[in-house]
Image (cartoon, rainbow, N blue to C red; front, side, top):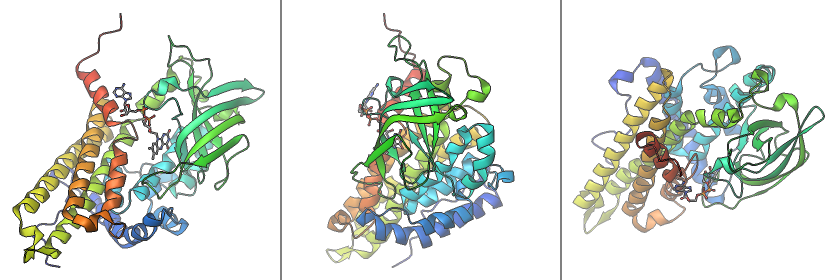
Length: 403
Ligand SMILES: Cc1cc2nc3c(=O)[nH]c(=O)nc-3n(C[C@H](O)[C@H](O)[C@H](O)COP(=O)(O)OP(=O)(O)OC[C@H]3O[C@@H](n4cnc5c(N)ncnc54)[C@H](O)[C@@H]3O)c2cc1C
């Protein structure tokens, strides 16, 4: 294959570049291309999940402990490095870029449990999952109905959850439930998080589940779950140590923690789009029609130019939002902006890439269709594009209270 004139893979821009960051990016890139991509190409078309050996290798490299302090075995790095590594992994397989976030559930545990589990989480040997969405509560999380009722020494959870990704393999399910009856006038009141510890590969007592049939994101199974008198001890109520008394403390805590996941999702979107771009540049040089490479047709060249420009713009915003988050600035609006722009861009770019590949793009023989299916999801999870626009517009144009 002739070499491309410019490398579409990003160099870290000068204001953010350090030798350490460049080395981290290169390490993640080498791992993604040599280890993750061949496995993804083999397993995703047959809906295979991430193999245990690959997860163990990721643990060795520190990918589960990027944000964790070194004294727990983490890398002690920031959101910027988290985004750098995520983009590289997602370029190969979004499922792998996603699983590194599952160790972060450990931050919500009480101090004794955090001490116990963080060293394992940093190595990927203890991972969690989030059971927040319900059949009747997706974008509108304040309408959840799963109940937590006080029992002797703990709580009993009852209700239905939807879309709980990784519920089967996780060591802990973080369940969002309400410990007060639903009150339409105080919808955020009584929302709390409960850590349900479990053995990987099975559901705990009082929990049953069925996998949901999805069109993509095959590296991890996603479940609907039923909680029937599932008991959790008192120390598994998130926030019990600080005696959170405010009625809406649990909801505010969940909402405040959304910026890093949204930057992570932007990085996943950008990685997918870059995979689609790189593959399209290669294919446009190889594939000949009318006696010349399709990359010589201006329409293809301009598609490539547009794709590369859109990726670069989203990445620049992602770097900025990640750097601000590391500087301790609360970035709710900017996090929503970058998640919205990057996910919309990702699907557009992956779709254009599929078009450049013609019929070959519509087969499961090439990874383009995977990028396209996974990019489609980035517009839905971690808050839909419409909800991201709502967050941004509410910051800029406060809505009039209902009269
Ligand atoms: C593959 C997959 C994995 C997931 N993993 C998890 C997980 O691990 N844990 C978890 O808790 N959840 C998970 N989710 C759930 C995900 O977060 C929700 O799907 C998402 O929040 C949207 O909720 P919904 O699907 O119920 O759609 P709805 O909220 O019903 O939205 C339907 C449509 O209405 C629009 N809409 C809704 N409200 C408004 C509004 N106010 N203004 C304008 N438009 C609006 C939405 O944007 C969307 O287009 C996952 C979802 C998927 C598909």
